[in-house]
Length: 449
Image 1 (tube, rainbow, N blue to C red):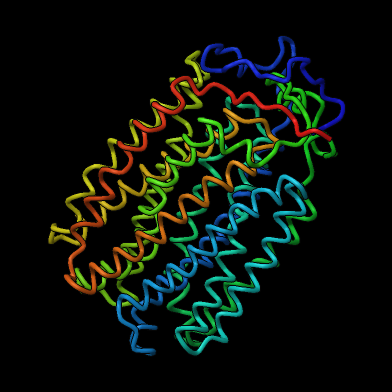
Image 2: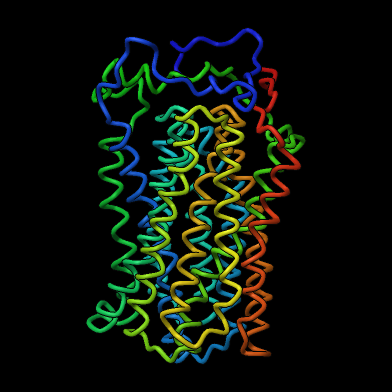
């Protein structure tokens, strides 16, 4: 935390749910001259895009690799689980590491690690060696959201955080759009190994821009004094370290954790199984699946930004943070429900529209769910809370991958996964409201030095 920033004597933040002024406009007479924070948001967007390109390559090549190596659905499910197990445990370590090292260095080290892991997949020649590469990729990629959410908390006032999160989170869909478009061409010229090498190497291009551009707002020469004052317009936060174990005793932590536990497996299902669903259910080949996947994730991009805009707009209009976030969460949760019919429609277009709507609502839901961490916790704890929640979501994804792979192997039907996907978000909204009825900030005391 910037030393120039005052620290409240109480060490306790006022609740934005009870006090709408917790996310005030810029001080009177101060104009927001400068928008460099949105350049930082764009950098986060590109990083997230790269992250999802790396993890999506396997899903796009699922049918090809199953053919070449003789894998069945359970074998493929084991690879998905390998990624998610490492992602789960990496989340806890990554969140804490980002809080310790800072956003700039922590994100840079993670990008290097997972880009090398992605490239290293090209060396795999068996199920076990693929699993090792997926373990490494999952461990490295686990830092993406703790780092990104912490960056948003550093660079944006509370009332803009959901929108900024929605924008960078759209990179998950952009990555899923780009990957099926470029992978078939790479495979045609250099084989499937070339796809892992080429996409993995893009991380070092992003890394150069990150190291050149990213600094904290107070240390950046491109940030005007007016913009810096606007970024810091929320009430000041207490400083000091927070015991990780202490976070697990808080209802606010469990509200975020349960939201991730219930909804993350649905996104993993879309990411890793929808390409195969379109190929098996609708008879599309590797090239034919490209445009339906692009359509799904284009729709989901709209949802990511719109979901963040809804709550940010409501706060701008005077609604409390609590009301704004939960209104957006509920709208998105209701919008997911029609996906329960995706498995039974015969029209490819109808299936794509249903899945696209559900993916859009997931992204809008996630933009607001992620923002709850910076609503309820000080910046210094955001990375750790993100790590805890991310671990919970990934653990749920591990179990879900096992269930889905065995169901498909035994029945060949996608009915149960789509029905589970349709109801998960309404349950998540209810649990979040029970655990954090007012989204009041956590009462935290620094560790004893």
